[in-house]
Length: 221
Image (cartoon, rainbow, N blue to C red; front, top):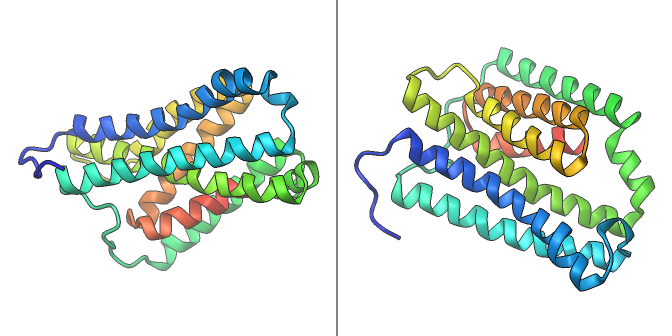
């Protein structure tokens, strides 16, 4: 790694956010291009083993991308996202709980039931386990989108109480869901979730050690 540069700009962090978003997009290359050629049929017709292989390959790819982004951020830009922030106040915890409840309500309406229950019923135990391991890595990457998006716009606009990262996540993640799921409604719901995640990140004082498990719970439910 190169030594830390002296004058870090917002564009440097926005590039890291976009790298995380691009990293999420690598799954589409596997799912819609490479693997259909290898298996001889589209994703909808894969068997259990093929789905599991897909998730494992995707998780490995996402893990490598996450590691590289974190190393560049820490070593080149001097921004270690794991440095613990200040303690949270009671009102912040209450607002986080409200965000979780709101996210659960949106998910319940979207899935016509609890997402985790529906997926378990639909996929069965084995696929369910690997699907949720996959969700852990997806959570890590989309969290990086909002963290570095937040950092970039804070440097540009000098205000720290606006969920810029949530806005960036809503635009990128929401747009991606429109294309991958073929539904504007799904994309809008993903965008709403992304914006809510950005609010949570600010509520926990940008503490990534709190952000990751909370966002995973919100995403999982």
